[in-house]
Each structure stands twice: as structure tokens, then as C-alpha cells.
Length: 460
Image (cartoon, rainbow, N blue to C red):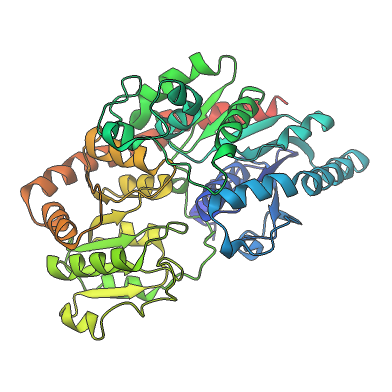
């Protein structure tokens, strides 16, 4: 019997697309989701990936996977920006050699192989212009929100205007050119090599301007104002807001960590809209003091909670050793802790009524798609921008600011989960969820943008 997904897959069109994700969970997820979308439209899919954080090819039997060396020795000892610097320095030659082999195989076996239409690459790769050597068009996948990206791209401008580096006395001041942001909402680019930030941003912008288009994991109704500025800044480069990617159809898991399905069984026993889900994603780290403040804020709220404590989340702590003995018992059994959860399933579960999040773009979008209001505790990069939009533009969540303190966390949870303010947010995010459903339907904005993207790739 034909499945729903199989019924939506177009016949093969004889064209192949090569995808090159950045090896972080928040970048791998949308790239592989995009691969599934394009596969459903008839394209063959090849994935070039690093050995670091290599995706599980078994979950994508219809894709071809090719691994390249990445030059990383001990990634666990480095921050994400330092890893990015190393990857961009070490991966260019292996990537070029792999790309040359793939293109050569196609050229030499025209009857057997699909012709390569284009390369789709993560926006943080700086060297993928080497595809020009093979006359291969490059399309950029943006894994940030449009608003978040525009703020990162403006870093040199923000520096010239004196907004960055951020000084405490001005942190509450508005960024006049980028409302509703304040100085403290400007993305943090923290690394041991701060002098690398501006060349990195410059390389990102130049690569995009030299590309054949940009794909965004967003939809027009959510970021219409920000999207409207793109044609001015990137004149002549087509823009394809085809998101949310994960809502096209149920796709294989691209999680780098094992997902604990017991979290779903636990949620099955909870009342509707009663549980606050807590997860800070795959990269963010907190210290032991902050961890304990979160723990007591959750317990004192007297709201049931599902808490993802990723190994490595707490600096210097393996997993739960920092929790007081008998913590879950002290929380009267209202809490459940796992190392990693199937987040899309969790957010879609009827028991979940709120999400305490680091405000990564994937998490933000997934929460909007399921109509779950948020408490935002951003940590780095574009997360500050996302949190500001959640709380002050879309008004579907609260923004925790300053130090993590148990009383503030407890109060925020009760505001979101128990009080009338939270119900108003729930009603607003339910309207956004309806926009998601509409944009993906026949004739919707994302459906139309996907059609344009398919035609664009076939034109190469």
C-alpha cells in the first residue's frame, strides 16, 4: 500500500543536487530536511559531510553520502566559533577533491548518472565558491531567521556606528536602524579569536552575493518585513522562503544524539497543556550555578516539567551529579529528565503547554508550528534576535534577561502556564500556527516559493 510520503514523491527528473551541511545539529537538521523536500520533487540527492558529527546515512537510504576529512583533533575542547574557523581552514581541499570526483563521474557516465544541477551549501562555509571551477551553480541555505541573519550581516555597520563591541551603559539603548532590537540583542560572536569575526561576516556576505540564490527555512507571513529588505541588499539573487522544512512530511531523524522515547510515554500520562518542556539545544552550555537555579525554578513553579539535560550542557559536569540527592522526589514527581528528546514529537504532544528554550531558530520555528508559547533564554549568535522577536514582535513568549535566577524562572513559568497572560500568548501563537498550515497548502506562499526553487534548479 502506498504511504502518504510515497504518494507525494515526484518521478525522478534526471538531475542531482549536492548538499554540503555544516556539522552542527542546528545546521544538519534543516539541510537534510531540505534534501528530503528536493528528493520528493524528483531530484537525486548527494550529501558531502565532514567526519566530525557525521550524519547517520542509514536514516536516508535514498541519498548518496560522501565523507571528507576535517582536520579536527579534539572538537570537545573548542568553542563552536573556533571549530568553524578550523573547518573553513582545513576542509577546502578535501571538499574540492570530493566535488571534482562527483562531477567527473557524472561527466564520464552520462547514460548512468544523473547530471549535477547545483551545489546547495550552508551559509557559514566560506570556500564553496570552488564550485565555480566546475561551472556548478551554488545556492546558499540560510539556517538563521531572516531578521537574525540581517543583524549578523550588519556587524561591520554596527561596529562603525559604535554599537559593538557592546558596552554595559548602552546595552538597553535601541538599535535605531534595526527595530525592535536593543544593543544587548545584537548577536554575540564569542570566540578566542575575536579578530576573525569581521572577516567571517564579510566572507559570508560576499559568498551570498556571488551565489545563484538563497533558501530560507522561514515563511513570508512570519518574516514579511525582513524578507522585503532582501531584494534591495542582494539585488538579482532570487530568494526562496520555503519553510518550515520539517512540516512538509514526516522525515527521517537527523539527530546526532540518541532520542529518549520514554519522554513521550511520560507525556502520555500528563494533563493537556500542563507540561513545560525545557531544552537548550545541542550547543549551548551553562555553569553549575545556572543549572541549579533552573532546577529550583522548575521545582518551585509546581508545574510539571520535561527537562532535557544534554551530557555536556553543564560546564565541568558529566550529567546530573550537580542536582541535590532526591531532587525529583522533592519536586513531588512532577519532573522527568532525559538526555535528549524527540523534540518535534514533544512539541506536538497535547500535554505540552510551554517551551523554555535557548531560542535557536529551529526550536523557535518548531514551537511556532505546534502553537506552543515560549520562555526564551538565549545564549549566543542569532538567539538574542529570535528571543526579542518572540517576545516583542510576535508576542508569543517571554524573554528572560540577565542572570538566571530561580525566582525569575519560577515566575516566568507561572506567567506562561497558569496566568491569563500565557493564555493570550497561546491564542496569538495559535494564529501563527494557522499561517504555517496555510503557507504550505496548494497556492500558499511557501508552496509557491518551492515551485520557483524547483524551476530555478532545473534551469541550470
